[in-house]
Image (cartoon, rainbow, N blue to C red; front, side):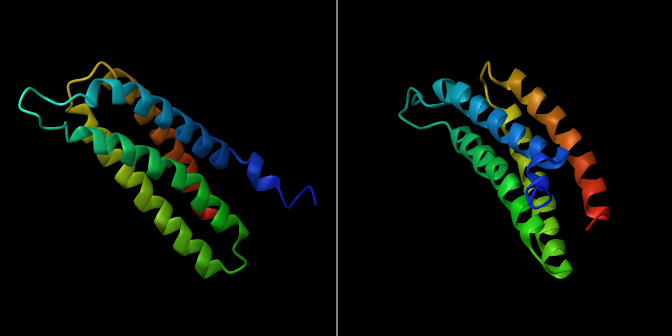
Length: 129
């Protein structure tokens, strides 16, 4: 029974949880800067990217759980591929948010560093599947 939940304490799963929490906090911080409409009544398009990073970062841990709980190697590889795609999209959305005019851009550097660490863990994790 202890082995069954061992993946909840794995380094990659804990890092995915940390990235999810960090992205939610960044989104909350950015939303106050990006939510107001401009002078001509147009909303800031970058506000959607902040929501995207939250959705994609929470999906990281969900995909990891699916991969860990999958009994077949092919399914694990499919979830690993989805995980790679999510990390790529997360990186792209961080780059897009870097272009917005907000004080929260500085916190995106933290998220990028954590994503680099996650990618290293991900490479090691894929080899164990």
